[in-house]
Length: 112
Length: 330
Length: 151
Image 1 (cartoon, chains in turn orange, red, purple):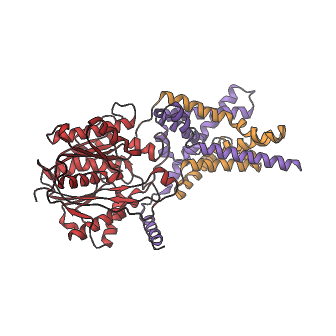
Image 2 (cartoon, one colour):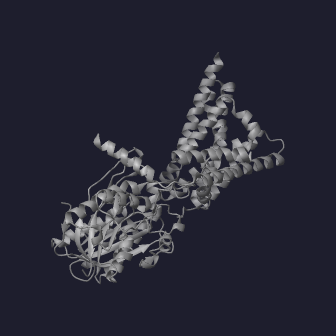
Image 3 (cartoon, one colour):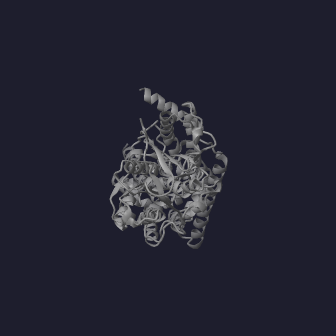
């Protein structure tokens, strides 16, 4: 998983160097890759093998969005397409927002 | 004609420079009048710190000229923040007539040129010109939050935390402003905000070429030709462009931004911001002129006249450059 | 028309003058730091499963991400993350840590504009597109999945 995680990040770095894109675009791109991988059911086999190597990169976030939507469609029908994605990723988003808010109350930014 | 000779030759009779801790460790560190220990400067926000820097620079320049705040007839200032708030809030603290100028990083030359023309015309007696920039305020307005973990590209520059002010008058001692050349807005279609040097270099080339042509001089006629914050890449481009126009810049050419930081300070192409040229002029150049090292200096900082909105909409970056000729003991 | 040609020529000229950096060191740094972050995630995941053997795999991964997000936002708050990020580039942007950093850094940066208009509004100034694109595409995938399932 070290190897795969490293390679995924290196791919991101290649994009940064060759296309000068910003970190926000990198994140968007990798989330979309995750969504697509999951949509075609390729993510799970990779995940079985790579474990954290693919789950920790933001690709995993995209995959759980799509996975949530798909499994919710199975259990709840069309409404699941709208509820499933955020439900599956709620922990991550809420944690990022919550911790960011908490720390913003305590800390100040500093010049480098 | 873009160039005017000033018959009465207004003088810079007082000057003051202030810089942040990182800037103080750079090559010009020992010439600055004041180096801040912390770049928040005891204030709540970086914007307030920028303002306080500007206030100290203005007060320092007036004291250096041996004048009182009440002797000053007009303040000319500008900065990089939206609606030039640092300058306006500073002027609020001084209770004197104020003209806000926006020339981005060329503001030091713009304010000195406008001030010199007003004094030369006999309309004003003592004018104070000031500008400054702060890394942290510029960074949050134009780029990313400070704590975002991203990498800087090799063409990017480091906005300096520094401020400078000069007092202009006909009476007193100091370098004389002999000529001013107001520049045109030049845009050759660079839209990469991380490559300001390349966006501004054509403006500097245009203004300097116009200056040399109209005054029938050559680059060798000056002891020092100095641009503001073209950085390493920008100044190389300027040398190329001027050579194509028939003017060869030699060893007497240098760029404030390019030489502002040492290589180790990780500033990529060099320093940038209003503060770069303002602090180097008021800290280094004027002191060296008074010491007799330089007799004739051509000071031509450049400014990038863009805003985050314009660049997000894909507009290219227009550049401008104003030049002033400083003479002492000629 | 003539101007546009001039601009193109100047852009090409500038492009040629831009100093070229060697890509290999930064690729290598992105590789090993990124790998290390993933390794850390794996370690946390296995620790959780070791402590709570009955936990579902999905839940354990969610906890792992929460832990990584906590670490990243803490490092952002104390001003360490951007130093690692400068060194590692995509090595810390691509993992979930980059997402966490992109929310925490503007939240802290803009606190002076107030909690509502500063922290809360700017929090998503960088990560917003990530959530929007992720949610939109997942809804799309869900809808298509539903339609495909009808037949």
